Length: 187
Image (cartoon, rainbow, N blue to C red):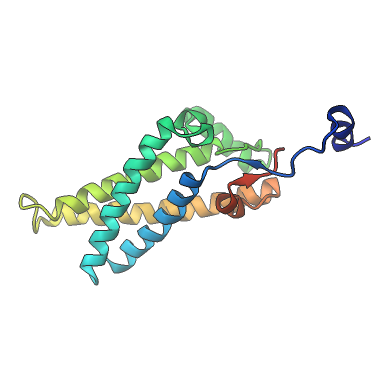
């Protein structure tokens, strides 16, 4: 007998094909942030008004996401996915050995990536804002730090996308689709 058959017999119902993992706010935040960051990065010095508007919108989204990380549903909370550096390194080792356990929400490496991206984007937004103030107007070092944060964020995005692809392959699930629908298979 299969596990699914046993579940049907024991519970009288079929187990759900998918379960809700990520709430609408997390999904909207994720895709809005991705689009706005690409817009801000692409416009840079070329279309300053669009660049600044995208930056302020990103800052607002980050503020909302941080609050949601403490008051949102289980899978949105930092307490659900932020792990110690030791746990992140152990998970990365298991990924390299193709034996990483599957997580319904963010895995330890994904949780570390969420934190790293938030920190890097806060730095990008803060230095971007600083460049609009009288105190730092024209300060070359602020512009250089701003560009460094933005470029490091691009690097993190590349690592994030690669991580999503590896996890999707290793666990045979479409994580991009899951971040669109908010649903994943239960096990």
